[in-house]
Structures are given as structure tokens and as C-alpha cells.
Length: 321
Image (tube, rainbow, N blue to C red; front, top):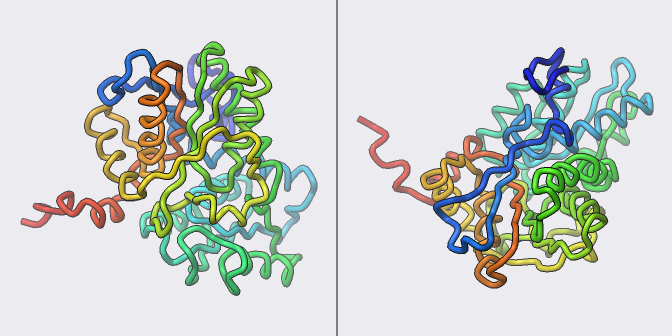
């Protein structure tokens, strides 16, 4: 592979590393504090469109290296969309199948994308983000498949697998440190499986213990796929509270309005989770006034158009002749 000419032998060589990072782009129109530059790390520039490419690749390679993906044995994983899309695309390109157990509230766009990249879907009645202790919820159902048919399925389990954290410790953290030349003072992230926040924060804290880690959570009752607030974090065994300085709660409706503002004023086609992170970053920018901030923007807007129209109805106006 040659990152200079951008010529690759296969899609796997395009996955992010310190030598091939996702871009950092400075916000110019929407940042009220010139003395506190804010940069967006555009994770939708990963080959399969989200930050989850990093964890999915680490999970898949681990299963292969341990010999757990034998002939006739595929993967099963609960997902609210992005991990499933990344995992299915990577797995199919390696000759493996994936059964994705998906909550019915996941946007239709994500369900269709899962089928496009080759996942088998089992759509069930569950919370928007898979959660434990809910009877036949998607996490428990995926575990049941893996336990009942071990010759057919192995479950990577993104919510408990340390490879999820390791992926960000070895890629996202080093990329940000190198791209900012060590100037980063604040990292802004959302909470989901918590692999991103734990892995990236661990690396950055080892480089500079004074880097502030800011997690942004949506208000309860939200419909931002993939995100959790602290009350929902029982699903993940990867969250390390000692690594987080502030947890900000943001009205989930702002996730959608801020996403549209980023699209219209910065040319960043950011999804709602990015909008939520941006709103949290603005709070800290106004509070601290000086710093060098990096926001991890997990994915783009294209998978959420139906949700956007629901929350911002005027976007649906004038679409019919």
C-alpha cells in the first residue's frame, strides 16, 4: 500500500492507522471562541462510514487469529447499526457471514444498509440501543444464538470485548496526538459501547495527564441511535469513569438541530451524535475559553434522514410536486 498515492491492494489497507488517519477539520463559522479552536475528527471517512470500523476490524481479526471462525461458522452480534454495518462488510469481504440482531427502532436507512453489505437481519422489539436485562432483547437474543448454536455462531460482543478499547488505544489516540502535535487539551466524545472514550482517553492521558476528557450524553428518552446516557451504561463493561472529567447532558433534540447547522455552516455532513457532541463542546468552550479541542464525529447524516424529518419537519416540506 502507498498512502501517498492512495493506491491499495484491498479495502483492509484503507482502514485507519497513525500513518493513515481520518481527517481533522477546524470549525470556522460556528465556534464563538477564537482562542479555543475546535477540530472535528471525521470518522465517516472510514471505509464503511463510521468510527465503528476501528472496533469491528479489531474484533474480527481477534476471532480469526484465535481460529474461532471456522468453515460454516459465522458471527452474531446485537447492533444499533454502525458496528453491524462495519462488521458485516468486513466479515463478508473475508468470507464470513454475520447475523445482526437489530432493535426495530433503528432507522430504516441502517437496516437497509445492513442488508446491502450482506448481513442477515433479525429485527426485534427492543430499545433503540441494545440493553441488558430485557428478556429477549437483542443482546440476550444474540447470546442465545451463540450459546445454542456454537457450531454456527460466535459472538464478538462489542460491549464487553477489550479489543474494542484496544482499537482506539492503538489508532484513534495516536492519530489525534500526532495530528494536533500534542497540543490537544480537550477531547469530546459520546457514550455508546464506550470503547472510543476509554481507548482514546487512556492513550492521551499517558501522553499528557492534563488532557480533559468530556463525555456528552443525551437526555433520557432520546432517539439518537448508538448513544447512551449514564443510566444506560450497565450494558457496557468498557466504561472507565476514572478517565472522564466531565459528563454533560444535552437535550437530544439538539443533536438534530446542531447536525443541520454543521451541514449548512461548516460543510460538515455530520450525523446527530456529532451534533450532540458539538453542543457539549460549545458549553466547555464558553466555560474554559482557551484550549485546543478535538471532537470525535462518529458518522455522517445520510443514515438519519428519516429521523431528521421527524424532528425538523420543515425539511420534509416541498418534496412533492
